[in-house]
View 1 (cartoon, rainbow, N blue to C red):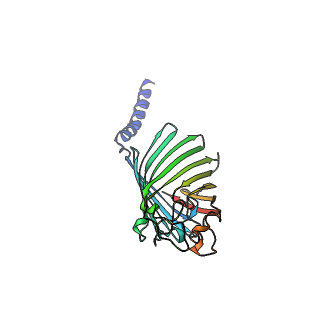
View 2: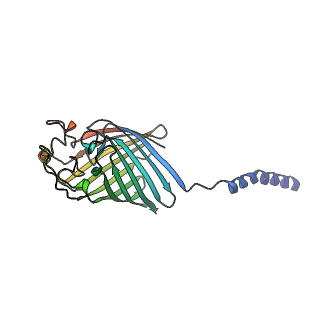
View 3: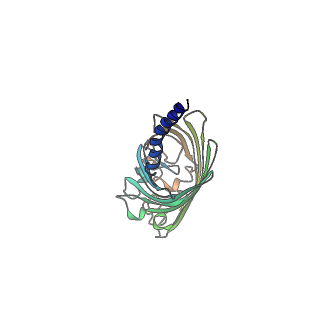
Length: 280
């Protein structure tokens, strides 16, 4: 009986030894992670305003992050109409930041360089950002502040779009404050999302007839939902709107209309946006 116990114990030890050896010799986890996404959208809305003339957009994003919290990222999208920024048909952003989680709170600070290949060089914008997120069960709340220091692309303004009046060459800044919420519905693939933002900046037009804050001050908001399906795919539907009225933006027309045409549909009004995103 004792011999059988020893034999059984020896066999168990022999079977366990390779597992121990495997754990000890397993390669360490890489300190670098790479992630990204590709998305198709019915419209590209930046702070409530269409950047694609109310037409579809294809977008891509890539992030390389270090375990220390430092990361670099890039984002690209097609443009049309108001969003062309001096002749460009593409937005290509470079982002560098630091993201760290402390308990249930996550901080994210960095800088974004908005560039428009093929467009006028004075259209590029550099913007600093800071975000603070907190989680409680299935809910996540995020507060964000985005500040673009004084620069030519935000100044050189005119209050008249028709006829276009040359700007004064000044530099202006821009402030954007946001609040976002996401709630994962338990036992479902659905996440309900809400957003509100406030912009304050140049009340006219930039050097190429565009602006980060048309009318100077305005609110934008959205309400929608993500539905995760088939592995890494997510479907989203959102209602997006701003408080920019026709009377408030009359002096900026036709820049704020589809195709920048007199009598064209507004590109700052409410819309329902659909998108499908593949993450990797």
